[in-house]
Length: 332
Ligand SMILES: [Zn+2]
Image (cartoon, rainbow, N blue to C red; front, top):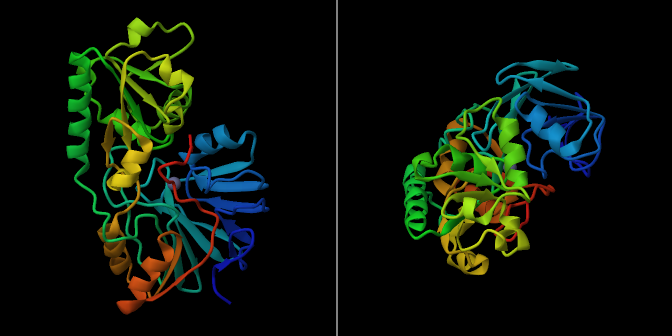
């Protein structure tokens, strides 16, 4: 019997009777991070990294949840579990599972780049590596993040000198805070959408961020003018965005590496900034884990697994309900 198996409810450890990131309600769920496709509603008990506790509680309401630190081991029926940094968003964890000397690692989502807000990715040696591959194509090769942040700061300064407001969009958990952390505050004020402000305030108890101001019904257009507004991608073209006055739109996402995606979104400026590993990132991690078996869960799973097999790895794909964030997804 494998240590972890893929069932209708999620990734299951029979020996411990516990699920990892289940997509249906279960008795006991171990959760990798706070994004909505990994932390789902309906389970009786949750165990996750301590940073995820307020995030998940905010998203799922009243739940029974226990927080753990990175590297802290807990045992369930002889199976040892521990969380290790995945570098994807604050609190994101790889879940290490060990039983009778055999080690499996489930990555959830991860990246190898250091983003300034998440604890950097930790490499864990294992026998079986269950990996995401959202950007598992050779075409995906990320630039140095600091260059992208410089571009963003220059774009804002330029808009400011033209008295145009900069509307910068990214996912509410992780991406927006990463943008905020690297914004040049000397250029002007930073305003936020409600969803952005809420999540940022939750994370302020763990991470220092520049001051932000929530846009309310009372906020005057003139106050916002020329400043920066951070918001989720869902505001694109909305009446909320129209109220901001004259704007230049920017969108930060790994998908911006695709020309078609840029056109589809019709943003003024696209910034290629991803919270997932690129092709080289995925391969370098897989090699370094020393694993014998690889299971791909979401992203370019078939192509990526085929490449691994052609290069001598024992790789296969399993179906999961983890979503690949796409250019058109309205995840806030
Ligand atoms: Zn995620």
